[in-house]
Image 1 (cartoon, rainbow, N blue to C red):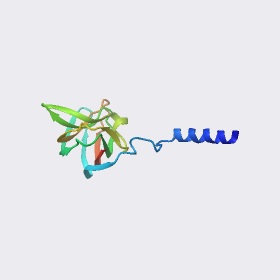
Image 2: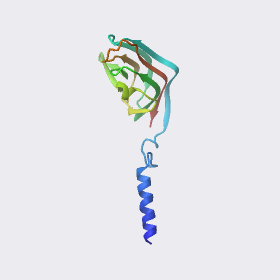
Image 3: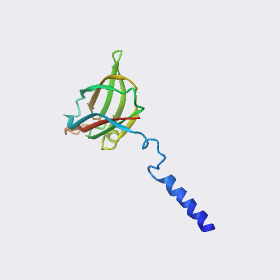
Image 4: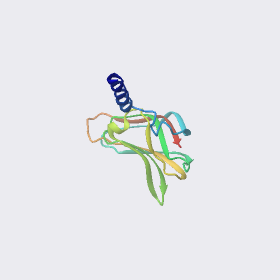
Length: 152
Protein backbone atom coordinates (compact mmCIF):
# COMPACT_ATOMS: atom_id res chain seq x y z
CA UNK A 1 0.00 0.00 0.00
CA UNK A 2 2.85 2.40 0.83
CA UNK A 3 4.46 1.68 -2.53
CA UNK A 4 1.23 2.55 -4.31
CA UNK A 5 0.96 5.88 -2.45
CA UNK A 6 4.61 6.71 -3.21
CA UNK A 7 4.08 5.82 -6.87
CA UNK A 8 1.02 8.08 -7.08
CA UNK A 9 2.85 10.95 -5.36
CA UNK A 10 5.84 10.62 -7.70
CA UNK A 11 3.52 10.61 -10.71
CA UNK A 12 1.83 13.79 -9.51
CA UNK A 13 5.20 15.48 -8.89
CA UNK A 14 6.56 14.57 -12.33
CA UNK A 15 3.36 15.66 -14.04
CA UNK A 16 3.26 19.02 -12.26
CA UNK A 17 6.92 19.71 -13.08
CA UNK A 18 6.61 18.98 -16.80
CA UNK A 19 7.08 21.92 -19.20
CA UNK A 20 3.70 21.61 -20.88
CA UNK A 21 1.14 19.62 -18.94
CA UNK A 22 -1.95 18.62 -20.88
CA UNK A 23 -4.02 21.15 -18.96
CA UNK A 24 -2.02 24.09 -20.35
CA UNK A 25 -4.34 26.78 -21.72
CA UNK A 26 -2.00 27.81 -24.56
CA UNK A 27 -1.73 24.28 -25.96
CA UNK A 28 -5.53 24.02 -26.10
CA UNK A 29 -5.91 27.13 -28.28
CA UNK A 30 -6.43 26.69 -32.02
CA UNK A 31 -3.96 28.49 -34.31
CA UNK A 32 -4.78 30.33 -37.52
CA UNK A 33 -1.95 31.63 -39.73
CA UNK A 34 -2.65 35.34 -40.27
CA UNK A 35 0.57 36.53 -41.90
CA UNK A 36 3.69 34.93 -43.32
CA UNK A 37 6.83 36.35 -44.89
CA UNK A 38 9.46 33.78 -45.77
CA UNK A 39 13.09 34.81 -46.07
CA UNK A 40 14.49 38.13 -44.97
CA UNK A 41 12.00 40.57 -43.44
CA UNK A 42 14.66 43.24 -42.96
CA UNK A 43 18.29 43.68 -41.97
CA UNK A 44 20.02 46.76 -40.57
CA UNK A 45 23.76 47.35 -40.22
CA UNK A 46 25.29 50.43 -38.56
CA UNK A 47 28.00 51.76 -36.29
CA UNK A 48 27.71 52.60 -32.61
CA UNK A 49 27.09 56.26 -33.35
CA UNK A 50 23.93 55.60 -35.36
CA UNK A 51 20.36 55.02 -34.29
CA UNK A 52 18.68 53.38 -37.27
CA UNK A 53 14.94 52.76 -37.51
CA UNK A 54 13.26 50.79 -40.27
CA UNK A 55 9.52 50.23 -40.53
CA UNK A 56 7.82 47.63 -42.73
CA UNK A 57 4.09 47.81 -43.48
CA UNK A 58 2.82 44.29 -42.89
CA UNK A 59 -0.85 44.24 -43.85
CA UNK A 60 -4.33 45.03 -42.64
CA UNK A 61 -5.26 42.23 -40.26
CA UNK A 62 -8.56 41.48 -38.57
CA UNK A 63 -7.68 40.38 -35.03
CA UNK A 64 -11.15 40.80 -33.50
CA UNK A 65 -11.82 37.10 -33.05
CA UNK A 66 -8.46 36.18 -31.47
CA UNK A 67 -7.53 36.21 -27.79
CA UNK A 68 -3.77 35.99 -28.32
CA UNK A 69 -1.21 36.32 -31.09
CA UNK A 70 1.82 34.10 -31.56
CA UNK A 71 4.88 35.42 -33.39
CA UNK A 72 7.46 33.04 -34.83
CA UNK A 73 10.59 34.49 -36.42
CA UNK A 74 14.35 34.09 -36.56
CA UNK A 75 15.96 37.20 -35.10
CA UNK A 76 19.48 38.35 -34.22
CA UNK A 77 21.18 41.49 -32.93
CA UNK A 78 24.50 42.40 -31.38
CA UNK A 79 23.28 45.90 -30.47
CA UNK A 80 22.41 45.81 -26.77
CA UNK A 81 19.77 48.55 -27.06
CA UNK A 82 18.13 47.33 -30.25
CA UNK A 83 14.37 46.76 -30.39
CA UNK A 84 11.77 45.11 -32.58
CA UNK A 85 8.07 45.81 -32.26
CA UNK A 86 4.76 45.48 -34.03
CA UNK A 87 2.21 48.26 -33.76
CA UNK A 88 -0.82 49.92 -35.26
CA UNK A 89 -1.58 53.65 -35.35
CA UNK A 90 -4.42 55.17 -33.33
CA UNK A 91 -4.89 58.98 -33.24
CA UNK A 92 -1.35 59.59 -34.58
CA UNK A 93 0.16 57.39 -31.87
CA UNK A 94 1.85 54.02 -32.36
CA UNK A 95 0.19 51.40 -30.14
CA UNK A 96 2.64 48.54 -29.57
CA UNK A 97 1.34 45.00 -29.36
CA UNK A 98 4.77 43.30 -29.48
CA UNK A 99 8.03 44.60 -28.13
CA UNK A 100 11.35 42.78 -27.74
CA UNK A 101 14.39 44.71 -26.56
CA UNK A 102 18.08 44.08 -26.07
CA UNK A 103 20.17 40.99 -26.65
CA UNK A 104 18.10 38.69 -24.42
CA UNK A 105 14.76 39.88 -25.74
CA UNK A 106 15.63 39.68 -29.43
CA UNK A 107 18.14 36.90 -30.05
CA UNK A 108 16.65 33.49 -30.76
CA UNK A 109 13.80 31.87 -32.59
CA UNK A 110 11.44 31.01 -29.75
CA UNK A 111 7.78 31.95 -30.21
CA UNK A 112 6.47 35.12 -28.56
CA UNK A 113 2.83 35.11 -27.40
CA UNK A 114 1.04 38.39 -26.64
CA UNK A 115 -2.54 39.48 -26.01
CA UNK A 116 -4.47 40.39 -29.14
CA UNK A 117 -5.63 44.03 -29.41
CA UNK A 118 -8.91 42.72 -30.83
CA UNK A 119 -9.20 45.18 -33.71
CA UNK A 120 -8.96 45.40 -37.49
CA UNK A 121 -6.16 47.73 -38.50
CA UNK A 122 -3.04 48.17 -40.62
CA UNK A 123 -0.03 46.75 -38.76
CA UNK A 124 3.59 47.81 -38.92
CA UNK A 125 6.79 45.95 -38.00
CA UNK A 126 9.53 48.26 -36.71
CA UNK A 127 13.20 47.50 -36.13
CA UNK A 128 15.54 49.83 -34.22
CA UNK A 129 19.30 49.26 -34.22
CA UNK A 130 21.30 50.88 -31.44
CA UNK A 131 24.24 49.97 -29.23
CA UNK A 132 25.54 51.59 -26.06
CA UNK A 133 29.08 50.29 -26.66
CA UNK A 134 31.36 51.83 -29.29
CA UNK A 135 33.94 49.30 -30.48
CA UNK A 136 34.47 50.64 -33.99
CA UNK A 137 32.78 47.55 -35.42
CA UNK A 138 29.47 47.30 -37.24
CA UNK A 139 26.32 46.23 -35.40
CA UNK A 140 23.50 44.16 -36.88
CA UNK A 141 19.78 43.55 -36.51
CA UNK A 142 18.12 40.93 -38.69
CA UNK A 143 14.66 39.30 -38.80
CA UNK A 144 13.77 36.35 -41.06
CA UNK A 145 10.82 34.02 -41.65
CA UNK A 146 8.07 35.94 -39.85
CA UNK A 147 4.83 34.11 -39.11
CA UNK A 148 1.93 35.54 -37.10
CA UNK A 149 -0.77 33.23 -35.75
CA UNK A 150 -4.09 34.13 -34.18
CA UNK A 151 -4.99 31.97 -31.16
CA UNK A 152 -8.63 31.30 -30.23
